[in-house]
Length: 95
Image 1 (cartoon, helix red, strand yellow):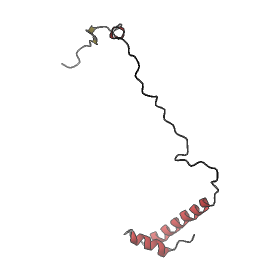
Image 2 (cartoon, helix red, strand yellow; image 1 turned 90 degrees about the vertical axis):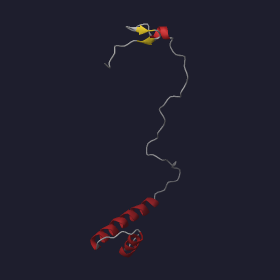
Image 3 (cartoon, helix red, strand yellow; image 1 turned 120 degrees about the horizontal axis):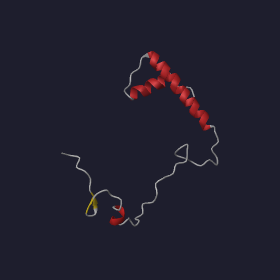
Image 4 (cartoon, helix red, strand yellow; image 1 turned 60 degrees about the horizontal axis):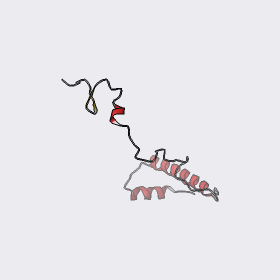
């Protein structure tokens, strides 16, 4: 690809970033390496490969929300130690 130090310096200036000469040289090498790798990836044939958004196929595991008949209050309270009408009666926890 051949990214030049002047090009990196220009982009840094547009982004209002400043780097020392050492940082600029290192950044130029790293960006050039990234662009070279991207060029290699561009050579890979992707014919017949289905586009994806994730490396692994994802699917929703939630069940459909359905209204089902519930138990009768008498059946729910059958084993309650104490009850008050159609509710559970519990010991007081706040004095």
